[in-house]
Image 1 (cartoon, rainbow, N blue to C red):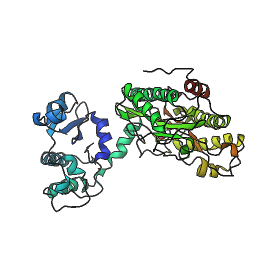
Image 2: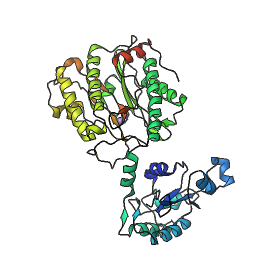
Image 3: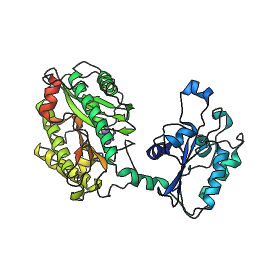
Image 4: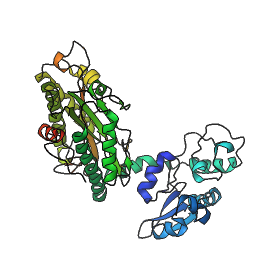
Length: 428
Ligand code: GLY
Ligand code: MN
Ligand code: MN
């Protein structure tokens, strides 16, 4: 299998295969008869003391071999790469690579002072062959790789590998979930009526950082009151109203892996939901648990089937609360998003893995039923204006699943105990 880091889009795959977090590198894996089954060639920035003053130490050619396990390390300049590729391609029939969609190259003025492989294979500008001196080189590489009968998409192969996590990856993701879960508990305890939503966000992010998270995995949602009716609300700048709820969709990244948790919590001095909020929340929670029970390989469910199940279950739950709606209205108005997605290095991971794929051991997915009830006489008055979601990260086992986000309180008694300050979350 040949691998080129063809654009930023593929950075995650490069990280997955090498663990090397440096820009402008490339990797080729060449199938052979060695015990390992392939030869690994890394193109990296050679050590340059003048640059290390600015950017700190880098792996260099020696580190690429001794630390990152390459059989061969070469400098990351396009001429070297072109020569190497030509030689390799002549002896191999099948090539797996994802080439840039547009065969165009950036203007000289838009590039940094140095030529990089990244520029070379993934040009940043859709215009301007004119000023670019290495046009011929760029075209030769693309031509070399695309003019073959046996060039295959790499991303699909990579997604299959990435979709089944190893025990180690699951451990890392469990840790990411534990950090975010504890941060969620701290947030529940900290928020009070009259605070700005972003103060809650600051508590969450600080709690993650203190526990060793690298960064947030995505821009978090801190949506109070009616803001929670907007599924992608990220302004996070409103004052939190007394007796409203706050929906928090937030997760940190740890060792390159994302967590993605949603919890809905009361904004009240006594830390309690109103009866109407509680009704809706418990309906969602039962739906989440119902879906989670089916997340085990032995049940043979797919993500698509889980979604259908969540719609049916939520429909029944809402009927019990007095909603007279069809499942079509439920899906169009009240629950207009999917039950979940694959999770891993990317938040929405391995997008080429179809939703109708049967769940297999090692897959990780989110389960995130939500309900967003507008001010519309079609729905019971008591519940209008309530928006909530609850989201867990779940690793598929054969007999049962592992909830990676279990540290984030989700039972009503637990949320209310933490929110009221009766239980103090572990402060890490
Ligand atoms: N936070 C984005 C999602 O839940 O998919
Ligand atoms: Mn989320
Ligand atoms: Mn999600």
